[in-house]
Length: 405
Image (cartoon, rainbow, N blue to C red; front, side, top):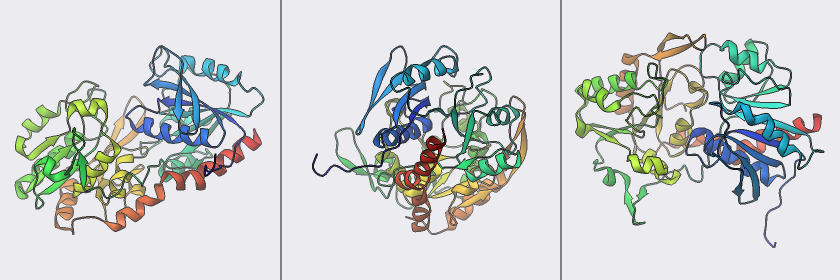
């Protein structure tokens, strides 16, 4: 076709085990980027879904061609079917060098004993390396890929060789976006839609309300406690929570927590639940970041932390943790909070709890800082653009991997 771009082809076959590429999750978004680029560069691709596809085999469409899409299995993380589906996928091109690629926490694969070639793009969100994670990454058939410099350093300290390839975003979408799209297709300034005036200090959290019922990695109790304290001194503040406040997936009842902290209902806006279920568009999320004065993102630990990069690409400064992946993902005009160690007994490793007074201090500094679009944050985020990451990191890695297979 005249005018169609041509792309360098890579001779190989990959089965990607992760959330389905259409799932409105962090893993789903990264899977979408990967599958699109794998297919674009001629890699025979299949998706092995652990969430987002159930009951039937289909095809996942990209603008460059289709990929086989296999449903989740019967075990919680679908490792019961990964080898089966990968071998079925290989029957289509048995001559190609191949790998099964995981994009998920690897500590869950305790019963997976197969020795097929595996690439694990692995999140390391603790401040110490969990033993089950180390055991998986040390397998002879596993090639580890770190999502963050923290992860690569942690693996190196344990004698595990890895390469570093960060998560990526589309900075043509996540950019300064003054307006959101209304249901009728018209546009409205984001703060006008939220009914927040321009002088109000808008603090946004974009963090899934998912937990084990007792420990919440996203540190909602610490962050909201800090906001309650902050509000007493800086009442000209509004909080936007981009999450479901109900404890449907093991998370906390945020409505009860907000009430217990004495945070007035008129000081908080929570994302529309129906729209969350359907999926906010990335453009509307970019508009929310643009309207915000700061993204509040301290947590017990991050393997990456995509919202930090999304927000900064839209020019919004970030408050993050000073441990795990977070400090490598905050530009020089952002803020890092301190914390104290917290033992994660199930994984036998250390998280870190954000220190509430340190969060309050960071909020105060953000309140007093220059507001509006941060060119520094935007410039920093451009290093995580999906095309830059693909060309500078994934292409060299995959060409080398398949050449040696």
